[in-house]
Length: 196
Image (cartoon, rainbow, N blue to C red; front, side, top):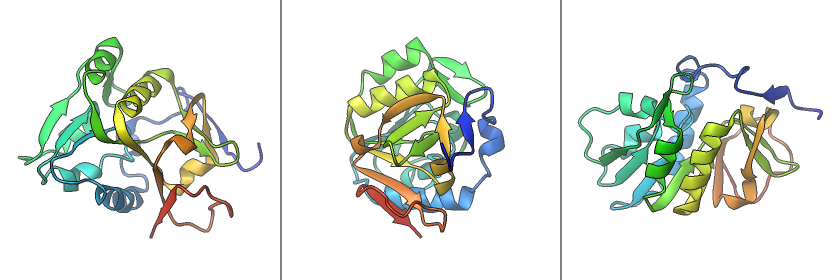
């Protein structure tokens, strides 16, 4: 489809540690805005991927419970006030996260006030979000099923990418946080929150 650079599959996707610094300032602003939704005492899920990582910088200092399978988040923790629950399972070195049947089973045990989700790409026209492979897709779906509210965090570059695996309709998210850019489509769904 015109406007899309490529279909992103696992074989084409860069390792998370290599992607950590790409658009990091943008990701940080998006995460700061999304973090404003969280109330003290809540239990939240933080997804894998680099788009979600900066959320921990603010939320670790607050009296909340954070559940994650994202090892990049764990690496940023320094004496957190928040209660941190780490989901174990098979370690995926490329995505720097836990996944697989054990991780899925553990994640099913929890209920969340809010789930903050990342993805590989978004097609606004068909209202689909995508992942690059299946393992992370299943964890996202479980977290969303167990959450009262779910939010998608993306930078505008994700609107140029389709992933190999369809994930979910973007209408299923209460809000989609994205940075402002001249590259954005003229028509965006009502659940988009544009961050300066």
